[in-house]
Amino acid sequence: MVEQVDPVTKNGVRMVWRKQLNFVRRLIGTGIGFFLFGMGGLVIGIVIFPLIFIFIRNRETRQTVARKLVSNAFKLFLAIIKSLGVLSYEIEGVDNAVVGHNQIIVANHPTLIDVIFLVSLFPMADCVIKEAITRNPFMRSVVLSTNYIPSGNTGKLLKTCVSRLKSGASLLLFPEGTRSVPGKPLDFKLGAASFAVKSSAEILFITIQCNQPRYLVKNEPWYRIPPERPFISIRVYPSQPLEALIPAGLHPRQATRDLNAAFLKFFNSKLFGG
Image (cartoon, rainbow, N blue to C red; front, side, top):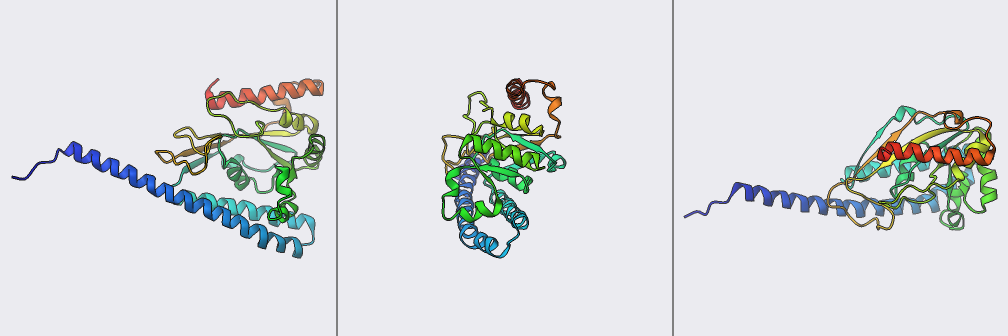
């Protein structure tokens, strides 16, 4: 007598196997993706960028070429990990991702790869990088060629960022300074608001969400694979002048505090509905 298998049980077993296979696929894909990212960064840092620095003597041309290379490398990385099933993402408001004059691009910072998304969207924007990177022999040529801004001394950083903004550059900043802590309120430092007030820069807001499930968040290693494929949602909003966020004529210190509060209000309303 042939034993009958309950169709419900059979479908349940299939679903479990599919989930397990999907998990293994994403595990392998994550390993491949980040291995390629590391190796690609090494090759670019020790081979390509030194050649750019040697053969392109004009500083502005070198900066443009270097930043486009970084942006395209990040785009390639995102395409690879998406094709490998590591994660999926959606970017809304791409038409707003136009680098304008004297503009600060302000974004929240929930995941490890936020900067990769943003540099791929804004290849010509100035970025603030950790000062330790400038001392890394493998990354020195990258820093020199792209002309990104090392964090370092606070006073020097403020002066450099404001100077770049007044000269017509766009500056990419995370007001939190580091990744958000899941489950805790957003905590914005005054730096981004201070740069905006001192340079009268326009503000371009970007929201980034990765909640279902969380992935690459603070205090979790990159190799921790969630049970389901993560989805990252990015939205770019139209830029707006400073006067749309705070009243004109305020004392700089008060303007900085009010603008920082306006930043928090914006992100809380968009991310949490608060």
